[in-house]
Length: 295
Ligand code: PAF
Image 1 (tube, helix red, strand yellow):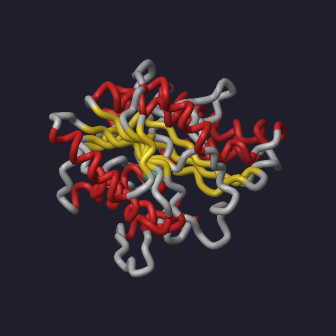
Image 2: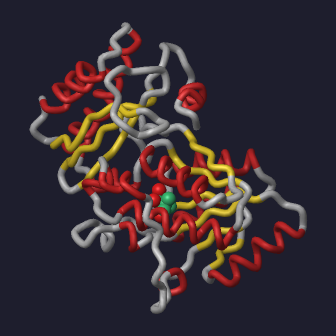
């Protein structure tokens, strides 16, 4: 695996791979790789003959009071974690190379940026869409893998690809959970043991939503109320939102249908955590649920 640090070298290497007949899968990450990321890498390698993982903590997607400075970084450990997967390159550009002094063009993903994660994190999706467009431009992959955990991000990226007629297939991979049910996230390292107990309520509220739907409940207001009640029992967690949206429009729904998505966000200690579940029939696999949500 090559560790590539410049945009020019990455473009050259990807061009060489393509000339040699390879199909390329890109896994964009901000590093601090965990099992969730590794599941994306595994999928990338299944789908294409060449795999490229980018590691770049993108300053443009962090707000001024967010955790850019303390976001976990450990390149050596990340490179080690990638070795068994035999990816072709790990792309680790510098901020100066990605955003040179004369950089002026940002992607504006529309009204979605003011809802849910966008409302809580102004400019976040503008930064995400901009960096993803840049990475796609640099690597020119056939396929790019993203995690279902960042469901709104995945929605924004799908729109980006469709609106700009980009020639890349976006693949969404199911959420990977740690043993206690917490969704794998680089930000879980911020949690103390006690905070982790509170954080588990996010997944439990989603499990509650699934059960209610399996038992025939389709009223979104009742389901989100039950989710809220469960989380609000614990003073250690401050719920930001619990909503159910249509995966196509991202609008909140009144009636839950197969493929509707329950989304939660909360602050626990200094961490802001998000999680979600695609609602569907009892017994559906994660892959089937992703299909029902159009992914
Ligand atoms: O999901 C992430 O880690 C980031 O938002 C992404 C897609 C790599 C863009 O910086």
